Amino acid sequence: MNRQCLDADALQARAAARLVGMLSADDAPLAPGALERLRFARQTALERARWARGLARQAILATPVSRPTRAAAGSSGPSGWPFGAPVPWWQRAAALLPLVVLVAGLVGIEHWAAQEQIAVAADIDAALLSDDLPPEAYADPGFAEFLLDEPVAAAPPPPAT
Image 1 (cartoon, rainbow, N blue to C red):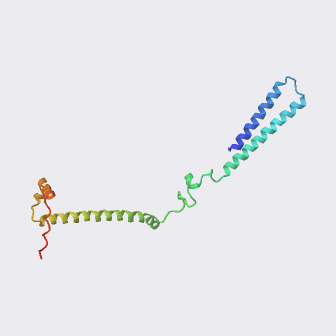
Image 2 (tube, rainbow, N blue to C red; image 1 turned 180 degrees about the vertical axis):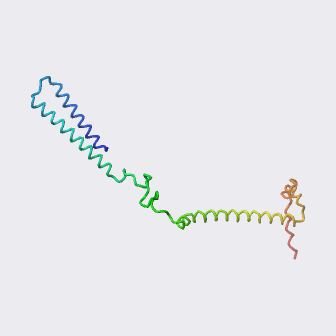
Image 3 (cartoon, rainbow, N blue to C red; image 1 turned 135 degrees about the horizontal axis):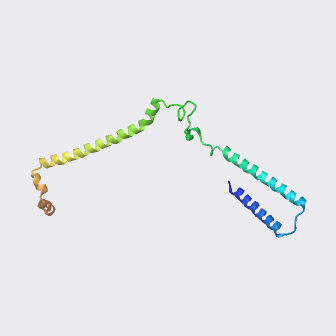
């Protein structure tokens, strides 16, 4: 129910409570005709309220949002398949094709990166083995200090004229 229906129901309940309070406050008996009219008015009001609630229920049930679709309800479509006609194999393969291409690209990138690392390591090994120094010299901590402390050769003086 929406907010307006709740407000209208609250107003009707207040009016009814006020009417009951006014009727019960007066101890004077009502005329027989007035009692019959009140009973008839009450029955009419109840019938109208039931009719209005029935219309509200029908309006709620008639909205397409509240009615579940056949696929959402789990019932089968007109062809007997759960979600309509079966999908051909080539459409399923076409749907998986982007995933296959993505995985192949990632595997290719990984292979290329590994080959680059191998090439860099091979270049370093070739430079170490072709150098005049033995490879053990590079592992010596004193050799690193020697390289840092080595003075830079000074440029020769210009020739005298």
